[in-house]
Amino acid sequence: TLYRYAWHLRDHVNALTFDSQAEASLTSGRVHHTLLVGADYQHGWYHQALGYNFDAGVDPGQVPPLDLFDPVYDRTIDTPPLDNLTDQRQNQFGLYAQDRVSIGPWRVLLGGRHDWTTATTIDG
Image 1 (tube, rainbow, N blue to C red):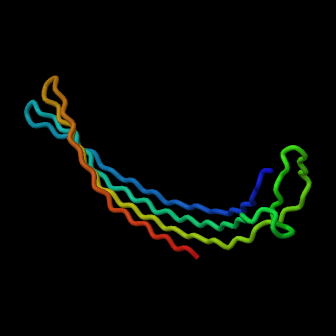
Image 2: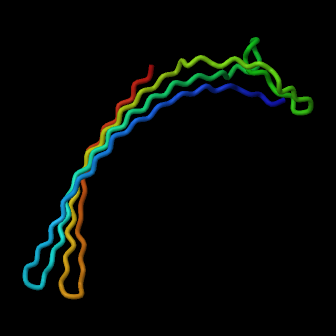
Image 3: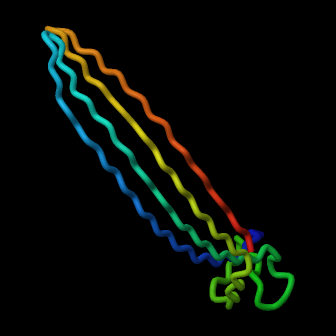
């Protein structure tokens, strides 16, 4: 006997992303710099509604178990109600900088980045 359960899921995702950067070239004698600075921002919204039924075949309308040696597939299974709700908001802001230094045949790349991130989840 194979015990089964039913899932019902609806989810929705929206996202907004922004990335802006500026580049400059500077030369001082034999040293050439290519500077890059930028900022990015991301905001995401996620909504999920979930319903499930783990009570396999206990009450009518719930998911009946499946006999693997004599399976019956044409049973009516009620759709579980959407009763587990989750909303999530995510924000991320980052600053970054990079300097590519060229001295004759030599190249050096220096860079850094810092991010601030928040996430808020509300279960209903």
